[in-house]
Every structure is written in C-alpha cells, then in structure tokens.
Length: 297
Ligand code: GDP
Image (cartoon, rainbow, N blue to C red; front, side):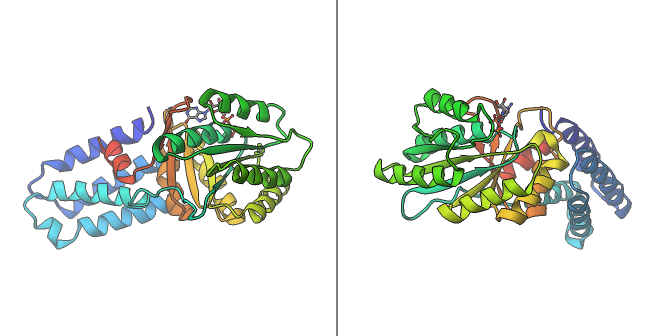
C-alpha cells in the first residue's frame, strides 16, 4: 500500500498528542521532529518538509491553540490542513476548451504510464463527461508504442489515429487534429514519445507539437514509485514546456508517497489525476483533502 510507512509514523506521533489536555512547546517541538523525519523518510522534498514543519509549528504554538480546551485535536487539525495545502488545497479539474475539440498532450518519460493513462483518460472523459475522444499515436520511436495504443483503443472502443512511424509526430498531430474536427470528436489526446532520460531532442519535439496544436492541457505523467526523481522530472518538464497538470501513476504500488506530497509545492502545478491500477478504469481525480485524510488515517 502507498504511504504505509508515512501513515504509520505520523499516526503514532499524532496519537501521543491527541488526547492531551495541555500541550507544551516541548510537546510540539518533539512532535515536529518526528513529523519531519517521517516526511524525509517518505522521500518528500526537503524544502517542502522545511516549509511544512515551520508553518505547522508556528500555527500550533499560537495562543488560540495552546489555550484551547482541546489543544491536541487542534494540532492534528493543523497538520491535516497543511498537508492538504502542500498538495494544492482544492481538486483541480482538467482544462476544457470553450470551442471543441479540447486538446490534451500527454508527456513524460518512457515507462511512466503515458500510453496507459491516455487510454484511461479517454475512457474517463467518455464516461464522466460524455465526450467523444480520439487518441493520436505520436510516439513513433518506441517500436511497440503505436500498437500498444491501438490495443488500448480497441479495448475501450475509442478510435486511434495513426500514420505509422515514418511521418513526423508534428505532422501526425496536425492531421490527427484535422481528423477529429471532421469526425466531430471533441476530446483529443495526443500520445507523445518518451525517453529513458530527459534530452534536448525530446523537449524540442514536444515544444514543436505544443506550438502547432496549442493544447488546452499539457499533462505530465510521472511514476510515483520513483520518488524524488518524479519531482525532478516534473521540474524539468515544467521548465521546458510549462505543463498544466500532472498525473501521478502507480499510487496503488508500494510507494513511500514523497512525489504526491512534493510535486505541487515544487512546480506549482496541480496533480489532477492519480493512477490506481493498470486497468483502464484505474484513473481517479486527485483530491488533496482526501489524500491528507488517507495519510493521517
Ligand atoms: P509509457 O511508456 O509512459 O507509455 O508507459 P506505459 O503506459 O506503457 O506503462 C508502463 C507500465 O506501467 C505498464 O506495464 C502499465 O500497465 C503500468 N502502469 C501504468 N499506470 C499504472 C498505474 O496507475 N498502476 C499500475 N500498477 N501500473 C501502471
């Protein structure tokens, strides 16, 4: 289960302060030391941890908390609020175009779950928003990528536009978009190439596609299992492409959770969805408050 270690540690720390009728400054300091260690161990970005612990400490040491009848409960509420805050407070929805079709560009490193998430998103948009999606196969470099997208499309009965692997991704995107307009398909998802590492060629190609299609959403797909690396990847893609949203995949796995807690604070871009299984129905909107509740149990 994701967040297991973090949850356990935070819960046991919190348990100690919960029922206290009187909380001292030393209690708060001791608790925050534990919280800090728990977050660092869960691979949360150290700057985020620092900011978080400082804010919680300041608020918890405030007179209104210390002098309240239930200081322990108040402190827990502050931890919960600030955890929610670093994850972005409110749920952020996917950007929709006023004028159809909405265009989403999927970007990310190879293996992050881009192709899978493209399919999941298409299914989600049809089911929940009554959209008519089109998947565009723009990853021409990985030999199996086009077939993989076609298989996904077949599985969920969503059309896939492909021009094979001999036409440039920019041209594929252009023609795919034209095709969507002609067929009155109102939600276009472009699968793009990933690499094992970030490189200049990849970013340039993505920039070119971005310039041409002017997407409503540049959705970065990152693997939660990679922890701090996921955050670094998000920073790089955001610097180069000015992404608009993040999908964090593989949260059903045994991840320590650091990426979920750091990405928003580091990039200032919201996590919009989380991947909770390999299956096509395994995509969920990301709710910061629910996630904080889940972590604190
Ligand atoms: P791409 O290279 O970025 O297009 O990645 P793929 O879509 O091919 O996904 C790589 C692997 O991760 C595949 O085996 C997927 O089934 C798996 N995967 C993707 N998203 C999730 C998720 O949310 N949970 C789990 N458990 N596996 C996922």
